[in-house]
Image (cartoon, rainbow, N blue to C red; front, side, top):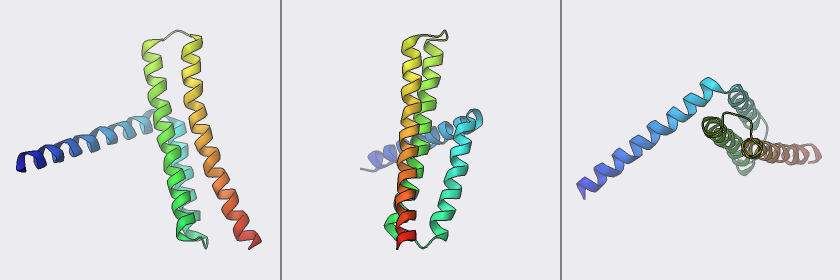
Length: 124
């Protein structure tokens, strides 16, 4: 049992390290990721500054994190596509466009949530 626990802790530690490497590499190379982080910080500040209910705040914060996750996925797709197909190819373009669409849809979802919540505050 002790060996199993140690192995799981080692696995968890490695997962944290690899995930952090992915975030820092994306931060260093992708201006869009940095812009989304700033947008999330501003969104979180607004979510706590406005008189929102706990579920509304949770939705806003979770959707913001999903936008960041989508941007990480998009960066991974673009990196692999660029490694495999450095020349322009319709399938490479499709993969990159789909990754970008993933980010756009999650951002739209976050925007819709903000609009609905703000409408509720305004209409009251």
